[in-house]
Amino acid sequence: MGRTRPVHLAYLVTALAACVLHLASPTAVRLAIVTAASALAVVGITIGMRLNRIQRRSTWYILLLGTVLFTIFNYLWFMDLGLGVPVGAHGPAVLLLQVVAYVCILSAALMVVFRHGAGDRGGILDAALIGIGLITPGWEILLRPHLQSVGAAAPTQAVYLVKLLMLTASMGALLRIARTAGTARVSLNYFVISLVSTIVSVVTSLLSTRPDSDYYSPLVDVCAIVGYLGLAAAALHPSATEFTQPSGWRRGELAPVKLRHLGFVLALVPVVGSVPMLFGETPDTLLLSLGTLVVTPLVIMRIGLLLAERTADQEALRYQAHHDELTGLINRRRFFAVLEQEVERCHHGESPGLAVLYCDLNKFKIVNDEYGHEAGDHVLRTFAERLTGALRADDIAARIGGDEFLVLCRDADATDAEGLRRRVEELATEPVWWAGHELPLGVAVGMAAGAGADLSGDALVKAADTEMYVRKSPEPAPPVTVGRHRALV
Image (cartoon, rainbow, N blue to C red; front, side, top):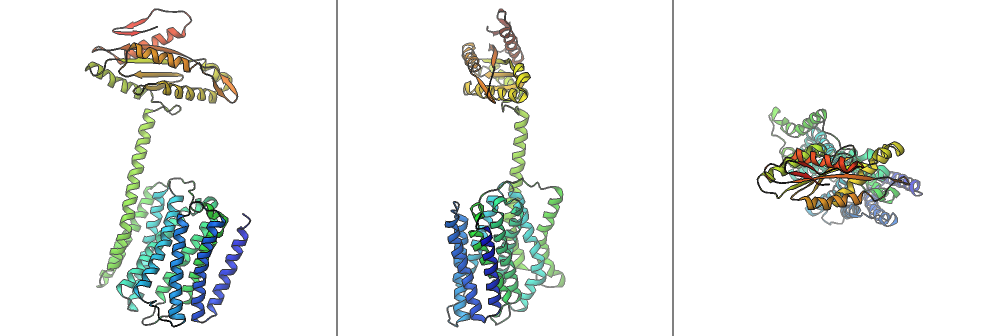
């Protein structure tokens, strides 16, 4: 971070000197200074990518393209207005060049926003929509009347409106991520300075436009200089390496209050655009059309995110209702639901039979008493992982409470279940290590298998449970039989 202070100092000195010199110079020198400032942005971004060894360069390449286009645009105006060399600076091609440059800057801003705010895209869209909504009254009350008073053509008004809508949307989104920018905060702040300067420059240019004149306020160029140099500083600062890296986010919930605010802002575009009708004038068709064109996709995306969040929340609740939080296995309720489904298959002759294994860990109380509950949780998770690895593709395992587990073997007979039981007993003999200690682990596995129309899931589990306790006791016992279900010892 040794370059932090030099970057700050260089930015302040260069920006201040350029602005002062600009204000004290004739038109040709002013335009030359603006062109030089945009060229410095090109050089700064190029050097910054190499100096900071930036890995993710796509955003910076887009910024570089935008600054190159701005430099060409500024140079053409310097030649035309500054030196009097006719190069068609007033033509549509040059105007399109400027629009593409703005699109590059805004695209880079959106890339930064979405990478930093991957977990809060709904909040980012809200901020962008609010930015758009807040500029509409200013457009209708101040900016549009001025353009009409100076006889600006409809395409010129449209260009100004689109630039303002896109800039304020990006500004709102960037401000949303500003608090959680992490180590990229400084570089991001320079980028925000550049975007704010651009907005002020556009608004000042609009308000200072005069009919049949090339005059514009010097503040337009001053803001442009500050913005160009801000991009260079953003790239040269050491934090530029994290400029496009995602940061930690907490998802912003769309609470009722926020929803009302968002609805109010969304209503501003059509309401404000229709206000002239109240005074017997034509409505603002540009705002109604272009504003709606920009807002509608954002609203659709926001609704899509809300639906996706709701679906994800429902899936999370469904998962929590059916699974054990500690081990990730299904819980008792889900196990018995699946068991009943499989029993029905047996009743209809769709399955040759079922087998249930009832597993109870040995020495688990000793682990909890001697090493604590964290060690006990580690044992449970380890056994659950090993148990899952031992199952066949169609078998399912569940933790039904404490140190007890159930396994359902689909389309299985006693021979299949016996093979699985041996594998489970073998895996339980493998050592379990926790905090440098070898924890004792063993398992008693009861088994019951059955088939036919009189098969009962509850009886199958009870038989397996009974045999598990028999195997857990030191004295052997005869096989347990329940109806046509036999628990094998």
